[in-house]
Length: 101
Image (cartoon, rainbow, N blue to C red; front, side, top):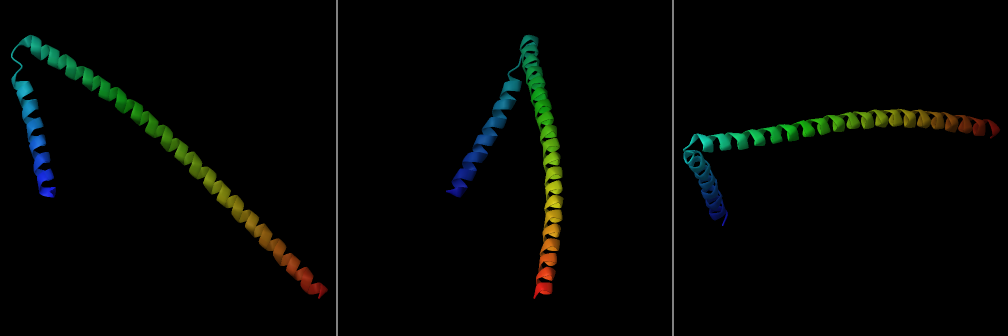
């Protein structure tokens, strides 16, 4: 069944390639070529706009990620400071307890 699915996919890919070639081969007049170019330019502009939006979104996400990483490092440093302070207090408490005993 895997081989059948693979063959079916290959047939679909070959058929799509033939269709695209047939479409281009069927353009016979300047008017048809003009319409095809107009369509292709519209698609190009649309994809460029989409690419620009995605690029902007990516840059915003990267900036946001950088901010979150910075906050995470600050929190880790704060936690390390608090742990060190608590360890110090625990040590002082143990020393005071030893002196009382």
